[in-house]
Image (cartoon, rainbow, N blue to C red; front, side, top):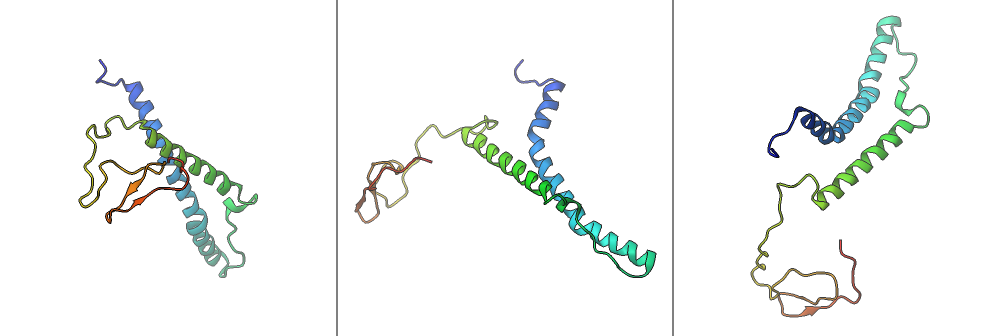
Length: 139
C-alpha cells in the first residue's frame, strides 16, 4: 500500500514542505508591519490625539542591534542553501529523473560528449582544441 498516504503522513509532509516558505512570508510580514504600516499608524494616532507628530516611530525589530534581522537572515540563508543542496542531491524530487539516453551534441560542434573541466580537451567549432592548464574542481 505504498501509493496511499495516511493523514499523519500528509500532515507531516505539509509541514515539512511549507515551513521554509512560511518563514519567508512571516519575515516579509514583520518587516512590512514594522517599517511601513506601524510608522503610518503611529503618525496618524499622534495627529488625531494631539494635532501634530512629536515623536518618530522606532522600529521594534531594530532594537537590540537588529538581532532579529541577523537571526532571520541566517535562518533564511541556511534554509535556502540546504534546499538547494537537497535539489542537487535529488531529495524530494523523485518524479524528476535524469534522462537515460545521452543528449545529442549541438549542431556545428565536433565533440560527441559534454565537455568537462578536468583534463579532457574541449573541441571548439573552429576545430581548435582547448586543454585546461590545471584540473578544475567539479561543481
